[in-house]
Length: 138
Image (tube, rainbow, N blue to C red; front, side, top):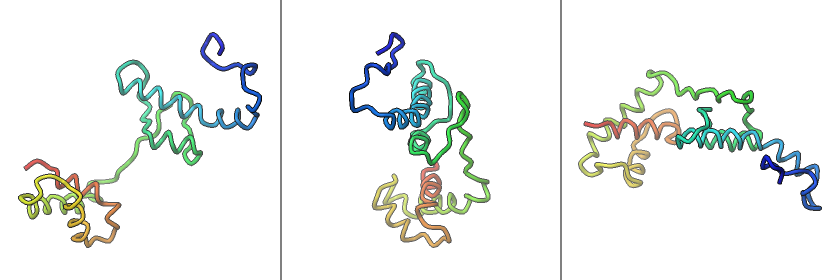
């Protein structure tokens, strides 16, 4: 290790190849960003980069581009109220109907709601919004 904590070229094992170095170069910025975000989330330094584990995984795998060094990831846009109102409303109505039997969200309740769902989008795309409506305090 170098005094700064990095590895020097001279202390790599014999099997370490340029391919290993290339792979590391591809992933280290994503992991550095994840480290900075983790420190920020733990209130021990770092900075807000809007970096979630899904971002890190996608960046490491190459399916998501890395923002410029130090720049946050763009925010995730979930859409307009008009786009989700029906799904949240469905969840709210479900709580009115099933709330006595299921005061909290459970796998059994989810199976019932999935069977009840008659929307044009698949359940997997609306489930979180339905759950939000179900969990609204009464």
